[in-house]
Image 1 (cartoon, helix red, strand yellow):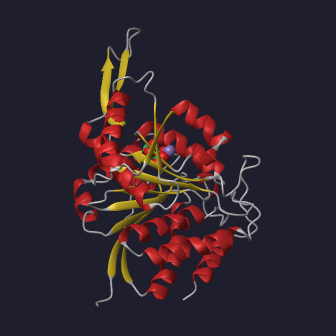
Image 2 (cartoon, rainbow, N blue to C red; image 1 turned 30 degrees about the vertical axis):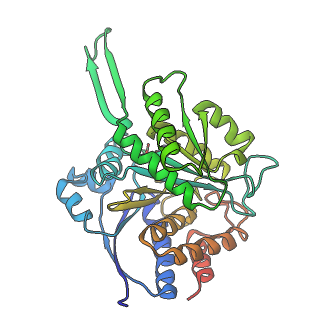
Image 3 (cartoon, rainbow, N blue to C red; image 1 turned 135 degrees about the horizontal axis):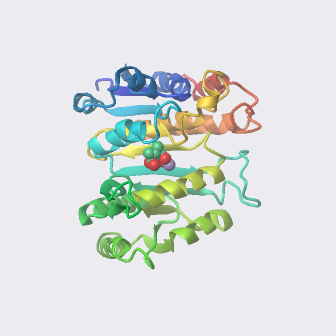
Length: 355
Ligand code: IPM
Ligand code: MN
């Protein structure tokens, strides 16, 4: 068998992005030695700095280049000097949409010895996965202004929910739930009592697909506001959650908090038939830049998800085991309070992966 050789595009991005990505890449190197696969990295400098200097974001040509990789590894976008929305739309959402990364996969897993603000709940209770639709909903940029700048101004922002888009997301979630050896329970999170058109489509598709193709998966439903309550009160009720883009964005920040904070929460923007992109879900944390105090574990967790997606499953499992050993040595997941520097946390995970 020929040795596998993956092509990985690396976007360090803004703020602490490049620092945490550097730690993730150290761990990738260790995992590749141990599990005997090769890879080539190519860096892309999409960032606030480049935008301020050249006015460039992610062009059509860049997208064509990115299509040739096996995966993309992203640090963070967001620069306080750039008006909010420009980098988000021009880099992050641009790549998600152009490469049709229609799933945003966000595990919410509390590791042993990690502090959670939820009293009396531990790793047994906090272990679920959110499958967030990542290509439509309120993120579709449909809407506009009427009479802008006048007292009669009207602004609309429309949630786009296509049967095709909803169905492919639900099917991914059902499949994911089937493979995950937990409770085989999929919860649709929505707002059927108010968003009666959009979530009626979700609900119908959910039950049709479930009845026809996934009779072994138990189906549950929760309104998004109630789901927020249960994340705090009874997180053990969840196994796999599927929801739309906006609700998924919101509930996964809450999810990140109960799993120990942004320092440890990783996610994947997945196109199961194309090129996927993996990232720590927190932002660029500009105030911590260059201080060697930011937590790189979310970025290292993103490498774990990346390897899992490209088929290096054992390497992914090893990285998670090593993260679990590492967190046991850290008094906190917060920047500057980890009892170790950014690079030391990276070293610790590398040594746990072994060679
Ligand atoms: C996330 C972020 C992005 C989103 C922003 C930066 C556009 O909050 O990945 O959750 O809303 O999806
Ligand atoms: Mn978010």
